[in-house]
Image 1 (spheres, helix red, strand yellow):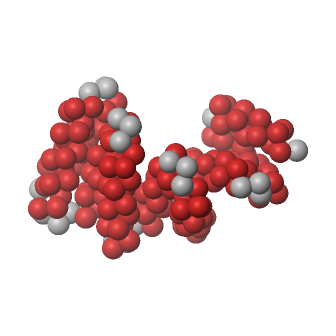
Image 2 (cartoon, rainbow, N blue to C red):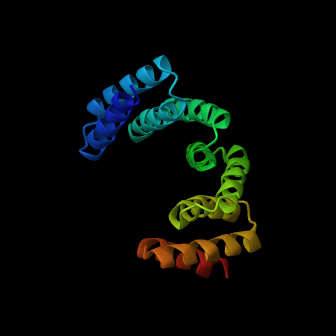
Image 3 (tube, one colour):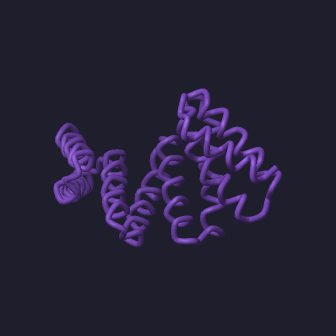
Length: 177
């Protein structure tokens, strides 16, 4: 049954990449139902996040937030810190997109703490969590913190060869200095 749920998730992600949102929505919805039915909690998290992303892509941030929050709750019950960090960061991103920055800040801090504590953290995951938190601290007027965050973000993007990320960090650093 695990293979069936994973196959649905894989097909739904492919449908999203192929710009077939209705197929992705259907696939992720079926995967959520099947994962719930069979108690596959890690698969449930992935399916909920996929479904949430489809809603977010379609502009329904409220539904996306609901799904990502449910995924976060399930993540807190299983032992997968990186999956938790990634899911919490997405909740923070949605909140920040909605202008709810006071709610987003502690979630970014939680995600960053997990990423920094986990030896398997991929630099891009850390950079992708640092970037929105740097934007948030900059908006709060926390210049010193923002500079430190943008500097680290820039280093990680440079190391990964992500030039748009490097250029964005440079622009923010120039403005802050």
